[in-house]
Image (cartoon, rainbow, N blue to C red; front, side, top):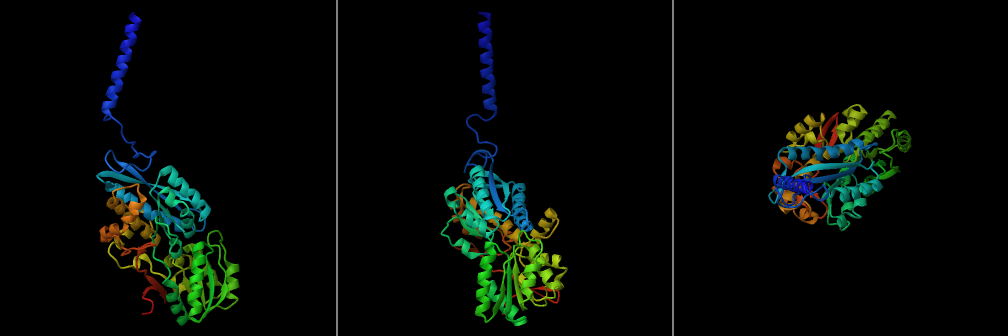
Length: 406
């Protein structure tokens, strides 16, 4: 009998302890600390603070590693600022960001693997993708899995797949080749050698530039795409191009290998001009080639620090403090895009419904503070953000903004 009474006492005590524990935790069912949904993106209202996971797939190793890191840095800086300011609110509920970044080595097949992992494991509403091949790979399943592709490529055709959940982040490059052609032909001549990167992005640039050049009366003496992602020496390809005595060379891909192509051309005695595709950045190229004097007669994208718009200087200062170097346009565009997507979630009233978030992007752009919209995004159309690109030429060892010869 004494043993029975003792056992009952222990059971009652245990029940009381469990009841007190439940009361101290607020009682009832509660959301996991990370926000629910198997530890990732939380619900859309009420409860404790949630976490929204932003995904990234792009090159973080190989020849394009710096390009991929520049993109990721922009996202990371925006996330840090948003989180440190207390996060953001959707339907009265507070959220903060987490980033899951995966290296795809610039390979579309790996991009697809990364995209599925990010969608299935982390339930991310947005995946930033750093190249056109990766974007096309993720477009095969992003609508079914319910996430937006934040696509960083200037190739316009990638975004004409009747996919309702893909956004082109940078400006389209379609307006560049005619302007490049006019400048280079007037300055150097009508024979062009084409040595673009052999990626999907490079193949489209090759096609569009060739059309603009030949329609203006020029000839293509060499069309030889190069592997900018894995090669470290381009002497063979450059020597082959120079054997045809071109007046102008189309080059471009990530900045560092683009700089190597130009450096080797100059070392082999080439005196003509360079039409530089928009992925490569003039200042970064000059650091490889030995100075801006080596780029005289080059046309490309205006460096960010020479772009006159409210908010640019503040962003550059914050970026330098965080990473110890100046940002590129890749960093800037993805930084601003993170703020746009955040504002779109607030306007849509959801961190889960990709279609609703997508439908709120136009309203989000209008509501974005001017200092956070320093690329001067005007709006959004069927393929992406509407913006006027800024171009530059190098003359007498100086980078000068170029208005297209108007």
